[in-house]
Length: 122
Image (cartoon, rainbow, N blue to C red; front, top):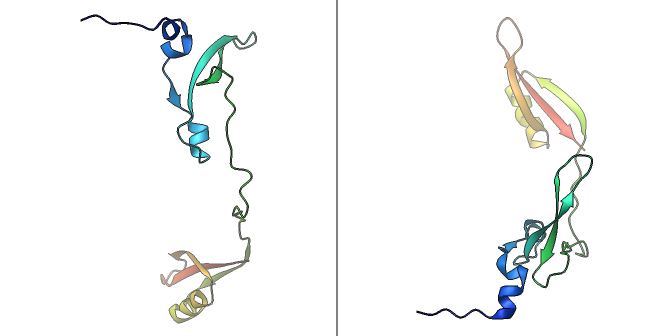
């Protein structure tokens, strides 16, 4: 068996390096962005090796992002506006049906009457 190697492929260093998918682009919704890394030297202060991402064309890789997506949901934390420690189960059920959130319960007295801690968020 004889193997033939194209001279252009053998001389191109990108074909000798292993290409892998860019995880940053993939998590932004752009899969199959193949990159490799090129060693560009060492950081003089820390001594760490500096790597530059290179795309399939041999150019420096620029991460893709989906910042132009219209209507991207933004999540805001609801702040707590009230806290209640309730001992009556019926009152606890009433507050839960009004939109309060259950946090925890614990026996807070000597007679071990359970206290239910509820919070109301805005």
